[in-house]
Image 1 (spheres, rainbow, N blue to C red):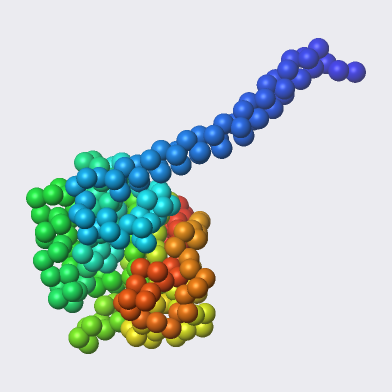
Image 2: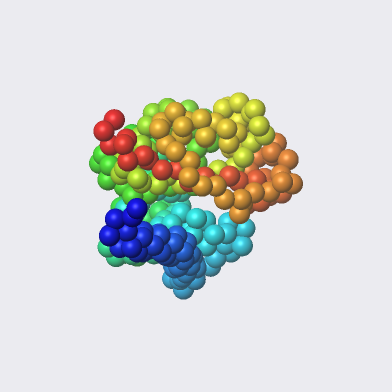
Length: 269
């Protein structure tokens, strides 16, 4: 025999079920709206008329709007950009984080002969929310747990490159540094030129490519958890043996694009 409150209990149960259903229906909708807003911010950054004609000429092959949308960079974010090079993505990230955000653009000191005055010309007097730093990859100049996002665009292969005999950093320690500076729950974005499966690490110093399995292993060993992968820059026709600077493959290599997260519990590690 049911107690007098059975109707109320049933009503409450039905209400809870209905609310749960609403949550299940609303959450995907909210996620879709956020994705749309993120893609819109990315497209707006790429369309910025302040960008140079030289940068714009690379857009068709580099697909920055797709890459930025995958990154999910938000206004006010603090982003550490490893190996910013001459600043193609630095300028885009600067626009994405906005005036309340920060981009720390890092290059190894031995890259000075390659970038020359390009970094200063891009940043000084133009990108007020960008700070420049020079360091090896395994000595990143940022406080512990201070970054929302760390990016490494077309770079991990350079862990095995020694320009002028310079050591750019230990691979495991570099990924440990990424973990150190990321906030718990923070995101690591890595994009690089793929080498053939099974290629040795030394490939990075020869044709400037890396076996994606090496990236995944280093990230996993550092404690990062993969949360996404994009195929937007994959190219099944790439033969993998050609140097990435060869005009026949430049900007057209098979490129992997991964997203990782620093687990929240890593803060206690």
